[in-house]
Length: 153
Length: 153
DNA sequence: TAAGAAATGTTATATTATAACATTAGGAGT
DNA sequence: ACTCCTAATGTTATAATATAACATTTCTTA
Ligand SMILES: [Zn+2]
Ligand SMILES: [Zn+2]
Ligand SMILES: [Zn+2]
Ligand SMILES: [Zn+2]
Image (cartoon, rainbow over all chains, first blue to last red; front, side):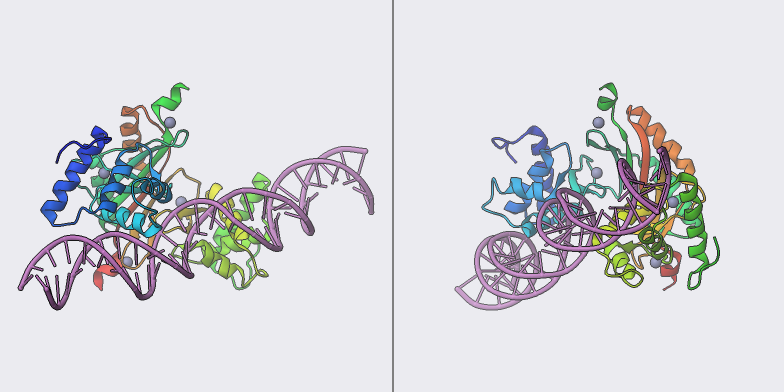
């Protein structure tokens, strides 16, 4: 896929991946899906569904909530974006490959969310879970605290 | 505090703790707070705010959303209940002492939520976080999967 | 090109949560 | 007991988040 005007390099990496993914998996890369993904990818901080919808309105004619939510659900299921439960907001996933476990560090001061790929402690989760004969399929972790930037201020 | 009619033993343990807590911390154990805590304590599965409100309506005259939400917020801040982010629902905490980290195993089949007190892996979280100069203050973990009961069915 | 499936457009509404302000209840000091 | 003050609640309205339902369009494939 070629470089598009007004797109950030960040977006291009993600959009390229999405494009490849859709071709390989015979999914449709429709206008709402593409634009929603670009909007989420263009932001480091998580965006709420109605913030996404608002920005979508700048490139698509008066979109309604289901249009945003459907695209969000699509990318979420495919692992391209994550939903931050505590914030009701969505962020792009930067992992090269899709993953089941989700771990985020959330700065309660400035709102920055950083995805951490701590694959190792999935083992301790699994071990603990299996003690209780619970079969884990996925996990979700939020670590709240203060980011480096906010510590200096 | 004495045993109350129509209360489960489970409720009494929690209500007794809450009573002691309020006396020691000079907090008011008001009617809405008491009833909301009892409602949440009486259920093993997480209850939504409007489910709590509905049940509250059986013991208090036509309560409105803020009445439920205020009591929920109170107990949540004091650590007596937890909010399950993925479900927008609330469960009682059975820990004897209050804690910062929250870990839940959620059965996606039947909806049962079990709080697991895995204090040990807070260390791996902290170590990882400190590598990135992020200072953690609390954490929240959801492990999704299938419970023992649902495996036999 | 015709049929079927998938996605979107559109309208309405469900669900979850909070703002704002009036009223009541409890505690401290006199 | 009376006054003052604060915390909590009652009440009304609305904000914020999310989905149901059905009509229409687009894509695929035969
Ligand atoms: Zn990710
Ligand atoms: Zn920060
Ligand atoms: Zn707990
Ligand atoms: Zn189960």
